Length: 105
Image (cartoon, rainbow, N blue to C red; front, side, top):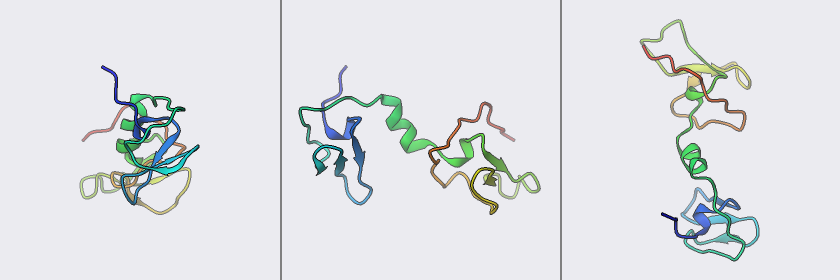
């Protein structure tokens, strides 16, 4: 089953967080259901990754091992920060590397 060709599933489009519009590299800000002649389907997993990847799922995120039962998702990023934060609420950055095995207590 093919998806309907729209700018919201195009590799050249980026969703605008303020509204449902899409920022196209060629046409600028357009409606999410708009489609130009240069449309190229983005990989399906790209949409899932953009919506679901969090810092806690990254190899570079170090969980707080002092009190894991009190705050199981608190830790720090070994690349960018020395302050601890909630890894389940922060979206992953461009240096994201999927954690090979999730530590579940």
